[in-house]
Image (cartoon, rainbow, N blue to C red):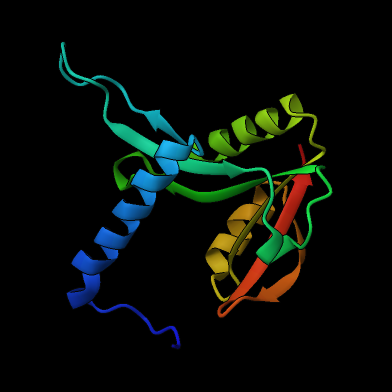
Length: 144
């Protein structure tokens, strides 16, 4: 099996896989969401962003030393993009790491995604090398 770029025709299948994973992760208590403003009285605020926090990530970072919290699947709805929500969630994740006695907040992204690498660097994350797990990933960390 080798990864390939998804095509438009794959959108429904990709959504299905992501939905299945989201249900499973939510049930485990690893997924967090941020909601936007309530647009109509009596309705729940729309989902604006999501992220996953995990205690270890051995496939990408190696054996856990218990000194880091790991961010995965940070995603901001396009309707809320450009407002600093992603940065706020990263700061919140850092506070979560500190409250759990962790020194580091770590994350990764596809190594070829220069824009996302720049985003994390601008958010105070230092590059910590790359790893190949079937796809090349760039690792980043900052103090929690």
